[in-house]
Image (cartoon, rainbow, N blue to C red; front, top):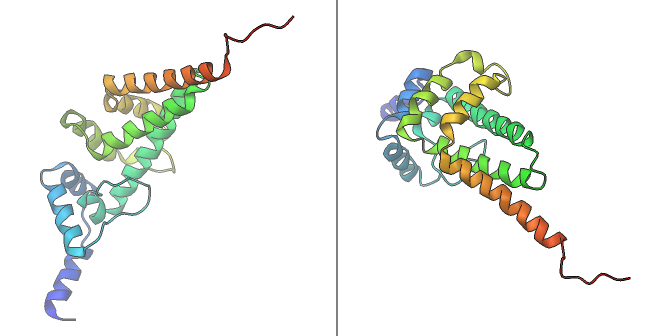
Length: 181
């Protein structure tokens, strides 16, 4: 191994702190850097929880504990939104409402709006939330969901549930049938 390869390997193995990774994750230019790395590697870099076709942010490639936290956060938010939706007693609309909410959560975590960044940073840096498989602090999760999901997201979730219920009713009820005596 030549001197340049050794230098490159030692730089790649240097660990960064969670705070540095969060700064990279939400800082300017991470997407360009991730694209550059993928172009150099001639592949798409990704592992673990399915994040879809989106590029994993560079800090997640550099800091596995932060990637683990973001994955734990996503799984916990998905679980929390499912528990909330189940209390609404939507019947056949529950599954479609939950799927719509999970899609929106994934999108918001992959491309957070600027006003969401401080909330995500604070949550990702809160060490006491990440000791178990799920985040058990439901208050923290509900708080984050309140800022994560927009009014348009909530309207889409409601519309999706309503469409599922409408489809079920239309396919099950035949008011035009004749009554037999």
